[in-house]
Image (cartoon, rainbow, N blue to C red; front, side):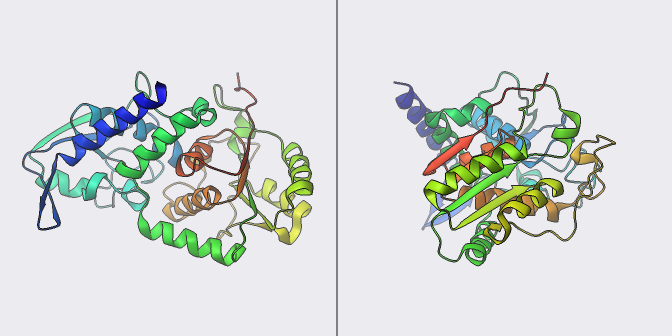
Length: 318
């Protein structure tokens, strides 16, 4: 019954949004005159990362579509880590560097041409959205996979770049273990109500056990933590693959700052694109082992069907 309800919800969403498109001679004309637009912003979490925004906005996108609006994600008009905590309206909406808005609309064009526009705060309370429990429910994951695929698809050029990197790293291998490790400010600050990540030693020992059985061609690690990456390199050498960055974050554990307060992170859209590429490539791995994080939710929303998966569910920091 629950699976049927999810299918009905998704079908209703699709009908609502399709009804707002003008179709003539196989060309799609976007209707700025009659459509009701909801500009959605999340202003209460300026330090939050890309996939914290992604899962929150996905919930709001679904909510406002169900209420008859075309939701347009705004990540530029308020201070956040992506725009360097400034309100520079000349910048491109950072959201649109990674994801498409529904059916070809853009924030800039809607603001210029839209006749019926309302502004809303995208709240985490009281809205059905992906959360850490979603990782352990395939039916709900599939629902959000479909919502993201239709209403917030990844930019095609980023998908192509991720595919090129994957090909370069792994050739034609179909036996790759993806690894997602969260470190830096999680380890230093232990933020309350956030998932506790596993230790590097725990994950390394687990990988060695899995490798005895599955004999992986490669391991692919995604982590923002230079110390964690170096430890994995020490154990797995050339079998471990990762995307190289221009420079290390040089996170200072003694200061215990949020990662989004790091001088090498603030406004660094190139670094954030690198993170996006990591998440996409993880979603294309054969198997996955990971901490319970917002990035992990992104991985599993992009791909709901791994051959084998291990998600560490160790509770929350108090």
